[in-house]
Length: 455
Image (cartoon, rainbow, N blue to C red; front, top):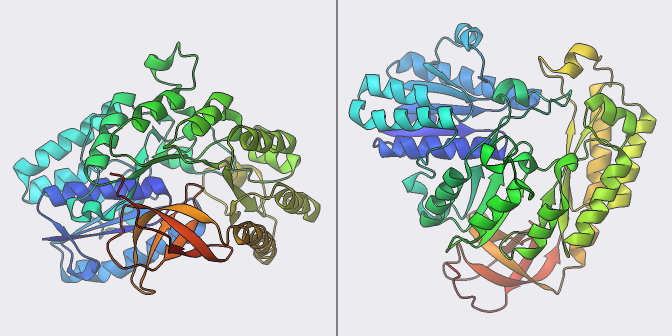
């Protein structure tokens, strides 16, 4: 028996897919890259923009032919395309899909498999899924056994959903309101991940800094709840690195920044989106801060965390964005010189305030022109930063082997991608690499010495 999982979208989807894979493998299924030969196919979808939704629909239409030839095979649609609402409209649109799974909730897949064959084996998975739904807790399978030590860097959700409701964002409508998971469950899952060979854990949340504010155990806490969680996971034996994302400017407190600086395993890398560099656009987005507040936050991050790298997100072509307002964003990016910028064209999403209240009046060609202008600027900024690293030695956690180019790859604590060529098995090891070439998106170097395995 074989399974195939197709995943698109954010790191939360990757984590959800890994859990589904682990459950399927506990039932005796083995992975395959070919959907045509799989007994169970799961599409884990994203609809944050139109493009990934279109890709998911395209995959569904391709799989329709396979279902006609093999009606006994199971096709599951999962993730934000399903959301937390009644999937009946999707059932009518895609009648060849067997089961529709909300984000982070595969319980109905386990029920279907129990009905088909795996009655006893699936009951425990159903109980786990129901417990997670009720308590957003209970440790369950984290990584598929077939992955083994191949997964060096793993994702661990700690906050599900979001209640901030930026006007452009569909996440609250598809993943539900914000819910923090109990700290003891998260720590236990982190321990399981390390036991399965994970060296680096990234804690996930739509607004990860808001972790714990809805939990009674943190009601009287004077410390940011995320700081307490970081300290607990940091002390797990065998863990090499710890990260978290994504942050929100309104919720980044100084004690969190100090914890990043003080805890050796926590990487000095912060992802905190600006989204736009103009106050009027930020107000229409309902972001809750000003450009100057963001500017001061960047300065504070750099002051409190030596050697930090900062990543941001930017949306171009938001409804009503004028050429002058876009120029403000361009100038801010040029001024702040951040280490990474994820740049996206605005895409109208159903149910969101922006779609209901504003006209999508920036032409697509102009959105693309603005996106490319920012992308070119960011390439210059990060290219200049990376060139300063030539001749320096950086610490790289090796994540895997690039077959096409026959070389190893990994990341620095500041999340820079590094490639190197060396004989032997390096996966999961911390190695010193001297940089010999630098581009805007990656670095190339040589291993300077044999590095002991820090496991």
